[in-house]
Image 1 (cartoon, helix red, strand yellow):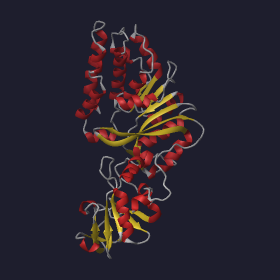
Image 2: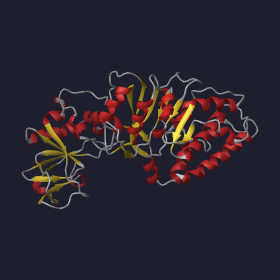
Image 3: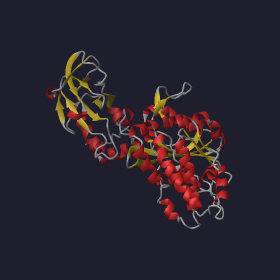
Image 4: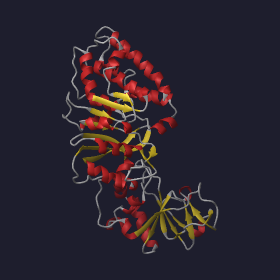
Length: 435
């Protein structure tokens, strides 16, 4: 992240010019269209730092509209006595949005920043982001009418003592003092702690951050979080959802794609630390009396090409690229083979592509596999086999999967880029869709 210091140095030079210029030289519009803007931060971030490094660090920053929506949950609860903590503040977009709820002393930037410095706290692993946050907050105050009465930029930055380079997992004390917590945590994979009760191995970093938040905030603390959809809808995070529900009285709102350059859907979690109550409706879908899981056995294809060696009986082999959508394929027509010693799948069944996006015409694209031979199935396919063993039920299933009501259901149920067995099991099996 050292490359980002180029942008921070330019931003500091610009902020210094704003502080020392004659009053009125820089208009609100001038500042908001300058290096200060969220668009400029994101542009410099992506141009200066390789995308792989950004993904590894989870350094993608919240857009203005989403930041404002997250802050809006706080309503009028923020005052000059509040402490708003962002334990993964990045370049400060959420703290800037939060500062719009704080007062501005028009006659004095110093007085304004003293109040903001008491009310705003942020932690980040990278010092360049911490510096950018402080500089952007200074410019935010000036853009809102605070008259610069501080000539030295370092003196202005000192007024934000609670925004610092630190690991949030080592500074839970900041969360304990918070009246409000706002966070868009990183979404990369990280190791679960030894004390984690709901998962082991690699987990989404956002889940670990929210575990930290829920464990440390005091009763009544407001929490607003922007989180990846996998936490809302993924089977792996069912225990995590139960944990959060036990600590926070919260609501869940799907918010769509994170931004045009980041192919991840997110949701807003808003709540307050409280005694356990009723759990939120995490999935937000209609529960149907009968579902696909009542009539079909559902599993993931077991063949992992990069891992499974060619060892065992030669069998017909299917993967997403070779299957024609919505058509019927006989096992005898499958040309590719795999020498596979693991579990083979018996036809008839419908093979559904696991890779799936809300932007796709069909969320659950399927192909009917029929015939007498057992086949090897790649793990990017979901195998949906009728409990009746009848081809006719597979044909009914294809009709259900093509129906717009199924698309609507899945677009609410799971906005991740891979379908899960549980999501497919829950697809409504309504009579009018199967006729």
